[in-house]
Length: 368
Image (tube, helix red, strand yellow):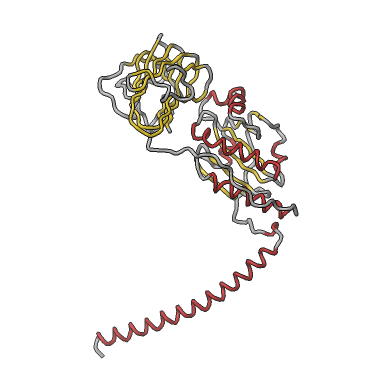
């Protein structure tokens, strides 16, 4: 037998073995399929409490809480037998703010069906630890569900979280069944809320509500945009986008001069500014910030007391392009929060100029 014929025979043998294996697999697979159908029918007839949750993690308890809004320290005890939506947020975060209309609508719609929403307020900046600031934000955004101040991020760590915003959904037995980072997925999230409430109702022997339409809110549409820009030297570490040659100088008051050549996605300072770990403070009588950017919206997180003049592309910003916190080209800074300066329908390149007076404190630029 020559090698060629031997190869043919070995090939035919291999083919026969393979075909036999496939046929056997089909027989086993069909048997498993019909067995699975039986199991599904049995499962549907089971009590919901018999569902296997061994592969799921339980939501951690709320720990290290520095304050309570719309609730009290007995909140943990009130979660028993409830479906719980944990929303990790912070009030000056624009991405968090955009999720709030959905969350408040879900609270209104499902709170009497067994849903409890908890806003876990885990601050990014120091001023967000002040309960009075958080209370103002809660009132501003119409939040009526419980909010807890996770000032030292103990609960944040218990969830092993690293993002704002983030939502976890736990069923009425406390198991985490859904996890979403950032904005979006609102329809998906609400459908899972409905599913978990249905499970709860069946487990408790309560009549299940008929299918309900989803909350109808127009979702913010993102476009290409400049990344977030930080003014605190600690926050900007490894991603510094200050365009002045003087750069960051930790703990110092620096007199900045705007260079002749400007680059998009960099900010440029003029005047004397104190460099702090989380922000810059204007200490001279007046100062400027110039920002070439690409986006639809421009926001700043700011504090102190100051008056700002807002210019766009070298001219006083028009009413058409003014953000919600700009009136007649001016923004009054009096609270520690996020201020919307520019709002344009489509992402495009522009140069923003902020003219400020002494006392202005700026933390970050964010974009939409």
